[in-house]
Image 1: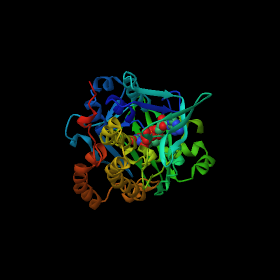
Image 2 (image 1 turned 180 degrees about the vertical axis):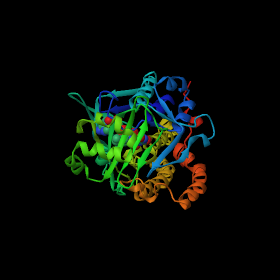
Image 3 (image 1 turned 120 degrees about the horizontal axis):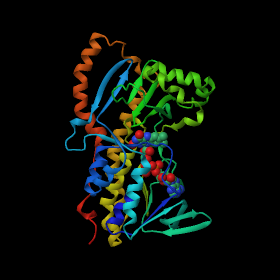
Image 4 (image 1 turned 60 degrees about the vertical axis):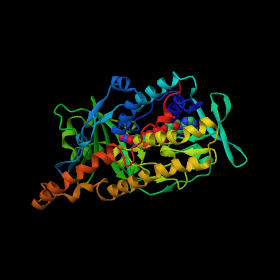
Length: 391
Ligand SMILES: Cc1cc2nc3c(=O)[nH]c(=O)nc-3n(C[C@H](O)[C@H](O)[C@H](O)COP(=O)(O)OP(=O)(O)OC[C@H]3O[C@@H](n4cnc5c(N)ncnc54)[C@H](O)[C@@H]3O)c2cc1C
């Protein structure tokens, strides 16, 4: 996204992607309202809407048999009052295809950054491999947007502080059931938490397990894994047998971390490379994209004029650190209290009279904030006039 925004605004940009295509395993399909707002600003709405997608308007959770709606995106202003669900590769392909139309956007697929080039203390580019070729690419600014296991961040010697989440997620797909319950994000009880993100033909499903517990889940066997899913979400009994091998189950090691400094002279880390978010509320993609917009807004002038300095990079960090520093503790708290195996035990089944009363008072108040905080983030970014394409 940052490569595209800068190229569109007249800056020569080289984007390296180590894979030959974007067709990767599931790593989040959520496109939040603030990203859809950005798509509108970029004039890409028609093409975005043409991508096969589904929409969710509320995030329901079923806690120990009690259905609650803590998030209702219809509370948002504007027409983008939903989360769009589409494969990440379709979204990335849209941005890449638009980029390819711009002469100064150079996307090198199958090109893996392997290290940094330095001139004295300054980072002046990257080394990379592309098939058998070894490349050296020099640049006024290098962006590390290479994800939670960032090679470039490591090469720079920047080490994120880890905030420790005690859960991992096992992701898998289940076919849709014949009789569908209303769209539901997750089912929690006193034993498990199972995520059921509704897609058109399937549920993108996940089970939260204690961190490092996957080997013992495997040891207990697939029948027990399937039974555990059904115990917390009984409606899945008719489809759970579709999980017949551990190959269908992918482990996500949940991380919440961030760098104390996102930049060196000539280098800036953004997205997961600067701050890995937990999957709670599915905001990782949104935050990465918001970083890209903020960076483009703040850096484009310096890049055009050749005057970019470390204080410009520090301004990007300052702008984006604040929303990250507010969202990560919310995610951590959520994992401590509810979003963990057995986290649903705090509600009785059925709820006691005082739990019903409290939910009746608290949920409408919560809904006033949650849609905005989750859907748009603490600091939604907009394209500045400096990012208008040069004519
Ligand atoms: C299983 C899973 C489920 C998730 N679910 C959600 C969700 O529902 N919603 C949500 O918002 N977030 C989700 N996330 C998190 C989300 O994927 C990330 O927060 C988001 O993608 C971060 O974007 P990014 O661009 O910083 O990094 P990434 O999306 O990780 O992109 C980094 C890119 O750099 C490439 N790359 C890496 N190293 C190199 C290299 N050395 N040279 C060249 N290219 C390289 C990678 O191939 C990749 O394409 C999930 C993550 C996982 C793993």
